[in-house]
Length: 609
Image (spheres, one colour):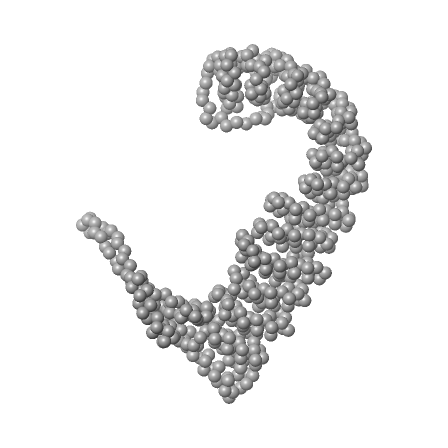
């Protein structure tokens, strides 16, 4: 006989088991107390799994446990039969296994259907032909049992015996199962029988499928998934058979089961590239991604759509708005993946619908309490930027809406978007510059303010724009100097308040222990005065730009200087150096530049103090 390879069908943690002698286990097995038998059998199973050899225990189990009616003990016995060595050193079946076979046969004919079904399920784990061969008639007889639980497991047992233990044990299994599935009405039994036909008798499976094509919807989800697996396997082997399954796949895509619909759509696309089939699959995927609640499922479906659009972009474009319904998900990763898929599908035909939806989503991030609303808003702004760059017609309708968000977390993306639009579309510059100058006082981010100042200084070209831009910037900066003497009256009024604040803060005393040269310990106290931050020198009503200049923000100060210089030079080109308004601009700009140049040393001195 060929050597039987050992297989493991059960796994337990055996690290903390205690060492027990065989005699102790045998004594507990011989006890009439069922609890002792259960504990002894558990200990035996764990020791066998850890590599111990307990040859004398087998006979005690057969004598004192095999005929029990206790269900818990029967379950433990099934695990024991799985792990116990069944062959001797000579590679022959142990004689004791004959008694075991008899006990297994008794359970297969037990009046309790649960015991029968459990034993049939247990037989699916055995791989020893010598043990299974005498049990085959009882397994076949259970195919006609009145209870569906028994019939279901009997069909599964025949499949495993035929597939793993050897076809010679059940040579007539295909014919038996074919008759069984034709008469069976239970969905679970029919599914297990069809599993056998798909793997062991493919021709009979195709015949049954062709004869019952109209009733597949009544056979359940498990049966439908087997049909899809069979379809892929058969069509991969013989592509000429695709036409036989296309109508079936179209029907399965409308299944109420999401798993069946998804697998049917994927199978259909893998079999054919016809536009009708791709359109139906894309529509199914789009419906699933918006209806499923599990985020992992959504990501898997979006990956399928992303792969589908690479070869069938024009077809997938038709369901773009259905795909974008997934933006209703509160999960940021889902929204990002949805936009990643959707942006490549935007065309002149659907750009207006897409941009309208994205604008609504941007507004929704501000009106509702969403998790990670700022991050989501940034993603939306980048997507709108991408759409406006590709389709200039929508830029004007989008940019004014986005400029309402210059004072929010996504302001940097907005102002960068405005910069790109102003550079690319000259006819939109006047309106955008005026809107940007009106919003300059609302911006509360140095990086955003720097970009806004650069845009104003770079693209204000006409005389009116230059004058308005210069007035807007100087109003935001205020008059020089930008230090504690910036507003003498305000400083005098606030002197007492600052003194009180300093007294309240008071000196800070810190104590530490030091080791002296002679090895003794000494306590050292250090008194430091609280420094007043440079930003505190600003008056409460000052604009954000002025407060930043007083705080000594160097990059922002450089942007202010560059923008004012550009505006003054442009005014010189437009009006000449003799115009009174130009001279006034020159004087005012020089005063602000001198104040900007002096503010950094003042800030450094305050910090050093």
